[in-house]
Length: 95
Image 1 (spheres, helix red, strand yellow):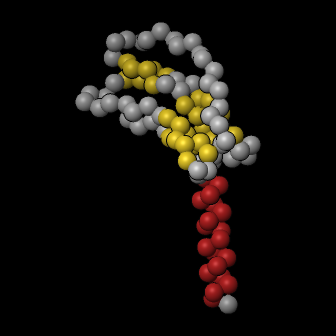
Image 2 (tube, rainbow, N blue to C red; image 1 turned 90 degrees about the vertical axis):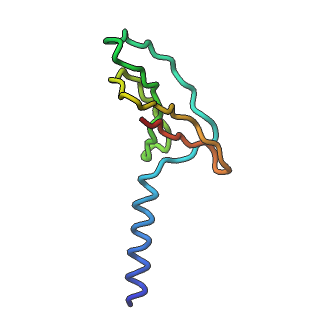
Image 3 (cartoon, rainbow, N blue to C red; image 1 turned 180 degrees about the vertical axis):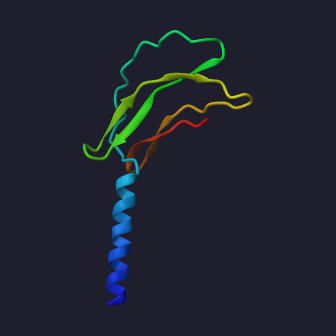
């Protein structure tokens, strides 16, 4: 009985965490260019838009870029598509 409960709980965790993770697609989605609004001031940097995984439709949805205050001494790493045997997966940018 304990083994059955343990397996059930383990399967539940696996389903929960797999639903939260980003998915894979067979090819990179087409990027739709958007107009970049004017820079608010010289203290701002542009962060390119990226992609968000929608688990209900099993697709990526484009997210717009935005202006943000610079962080002194820190750089922004752009997001990119990572190719693997399973397909393409979006890797978020980092600040």
